[in-house]
Length: 266
Ligand code: NAD
Image (cartoon, rainbow, N blue to C red; front, side, top):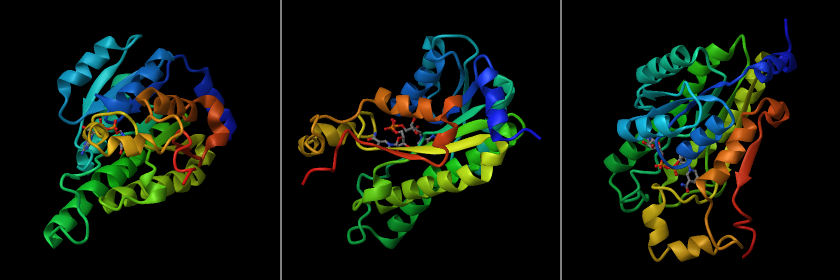
């Protein structure tokens, strides 16, 4: 049987790979979808409740063959239907980008003291079900389609995986879980030519962080980097795109801590 490298070679030989990006209607996911489409790939744009934005992106993307798929990632059955639909519409699946995620419900956040036990439990459930379990379920479903042809799975985790999220501990835990999942699956799936890796961004300018960055706390966030700004979605997308490339076989199990030299100064 073909070893991992041979399978990746087959992947490299394909004109226009089939790529599923979750949470692709806006923010980092949209930039990721654009990066793949610009590289000649066909993209399944996943969304939950943003059909208009997703369709607008589909029309705007360069190249042909892009499609829109829908699912609540916290619903395991919907995830399976969505991944299979993406593979059916694209004629297979070469790349899954687990980008979709929730930070909250973070407003109000859920500190130990300041939230009821019911709020605490509900928030852990929602955040883990979406960010971690949803991504794991999508990975399982995608891997079924990649078993014979090889592929790539890239998780978008967060700096919160390494540095904690005091006001939103479930988020930090979910992202640390995504890192660990990528490492585990990288080993388990390498024999099938399926590379699994992770990008862990610091602050990125998107709808998720918009309010925070506009508030008086925004200056402190920007001051964490010597560039005095936060990341642009395109800068995260470039790393995702590379990790998913056929050339990145050796990046399997890698977690890119992408943060513009933030957190290095006192
Ligand atoms: P965003 O809020 O603009 O995008 C997140 C997307 O995920 C949205 O389109 C949303 O609809 C989708 N989503 C959320 N819950 C879902 C569910 N249950 N089912 C289906 N879709 C769901 O935020 P973003 O900044 O573009 O974030 C993208 C990813 O990057 C997230 O996983 C986020 O945790 C991560 N991240 C963001 C930052 C940042 O500073 N913006 C930093 C580190 C990591």
